[in-house]
Length: 268
Ligand SMILES: O=C(O)C[C@@H](O)[C@H](O)C(=O)CO
Image 1 (cartoon, rainbow, N blue to C red):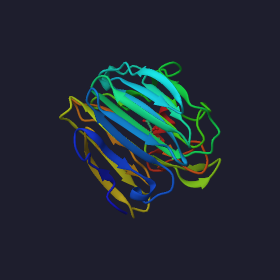
Image 2 (image 1 turned 30 degrees about the vertical axis):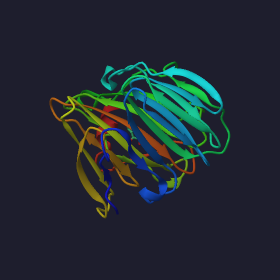
Image 3 (image 1 turned 90 degrees about the vertical axis):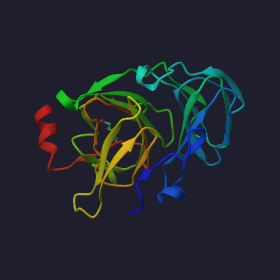
């Protein structure tokens, strides 16, 4: 298994460009632009659908032949307000011109032309708590199952308080066996608050053939091709991540690691 921890290539411009080819998988793509006022990002979606997430800052956006005006309101991701997002179908062009310092995530997966360009937030995205005790975290569902807004993409944001765990108890979604489980590749784009912090993410299979534990820093991306993928935020450092998932079926069905499922049962 290749290196799962992707470091940004810089601090301005397109600092991540993860494609199915570079990741060695079939579905998920993830790019990140860090823009200064006046900087431009523009792409053609080709055979992929895209969800643009204004992680922070503002930009004027044109996409699929429409002018979407200035998007973005959250100037720091840890304000935790709902993000401004735009769905752009396959076979379209989009461009964004930063009007403030801006972090723009480009989440992509195979598109089938089933949806029109549309705003996905901030309306309709409500910060929702999940879990108990030091497993409590807060989720902004951007385009998860139940919101039929994309052909393949599942996208969500998670805020994990300092000292808490998330994506936990450990779970996996790496078999195409609906309704028991779906095969979903996944990326994690991480941020820490304060920014110099680190978090921890483990990616592992139950047979131990994959077992990587990574220290993640702000703007790192972790690839999850298979296996369980829990995260921990150290005391003093709040963690944010943006998840992109996709596979052959746009459903999120997972199984907990049997060793740790007792926690889910106890907390249910
Ligand atoms: O519950 C969480 O803490 C987030 C995870 O569900 C995350 O979105 C994921 O691992 C999806 O498989």
